Image: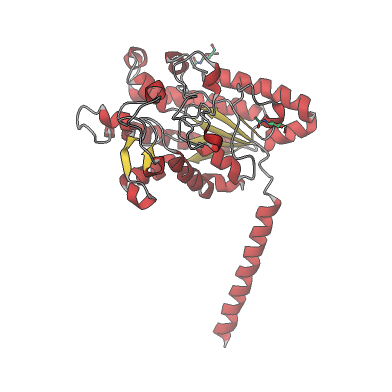
Length: 355
Ligand SMILES: *[C@@H]1O[C@H](CO)[C@@H](O)[C@H](O)[C@H]1NC(C)=O
Ligand SMILES: *[C@@H]1O[C@H](CO)[C@@H](O)[C@H](O)[C@H]1NC(C)=O
């Protein structure tokens, strides 16, 4: 009898808790009024369309599964993880690119993307293909703040900027496009020194964002970059296997980012900086693609899937029919389906704190 009562009591309590929680999430549903994005092609919604660079994807078959079948400059067949994340916060289903003339400050008031494909933490990385370096993305953000204040008024704009979710997703190109490809950095620094150089830039960037009013910031870690189809295809040691050296660099760099997150949360008042672990979910997908509904994890859908990205994907007769069966869209970038799985995972882990 006593046991029954206790059980019933717990049952009641848990019901109340569930209701309180759902009530709480409803009240705070609008707690993130905008997503503000910095980074590389993992999150570029089309800024590179406006630059003279070859790092572009505003042509078919890119975007063939996007709303309206439009190639927007996203490096995928459809939406990016940031688009799914925006939607999950009750915001628009796509995050507009700041340089896209089709959008104005009204559109940017609920989300804006400053990211640029082929960019990185290091200025020298952005220089390789003449894209927006991180400092330039910051300059555009400052301009955006002025425009938002003119549009929403000082007080409302400040609220938006304080409560927005800031997403940073970059770093892969610093290693793959720059350090391991161009002669400069690898002559000056060991890869461990280079990692520290990059985390130093990340640190100064976050401090500056916080000074400009950001409180909720997501710092996204590197994926298992040695398993990108291009890195497998060019793996000289074990052709078609993941490049474990690159994966180890990614893991090591990620542990430094996590250390930075703990440190800055202690140092900066009001900061809620989270680390998003895309490495583990991505590694799970690549290790066991079938269990996520994929049939292929080692080649991209576009062309042969081994080397092609950007212009070489255009009008290629070998491109696959159903991108949903592929983890990768081109030799370097995930499909929309992979992006949605990653976004779901982040909403349940690091980003759950902001729901
Ligand atoms: C931008 O916002 C305006 C005003 O809400 C809207 O009419 C327009 O369709 C939006 N532009 C795009 C490209 O979504
Ligand atoms: C990158 O370039 C900007 C603009 O020239 C400069 O202010 C900044 O110090 C540079 N960053 C590094 C780490 O060299």
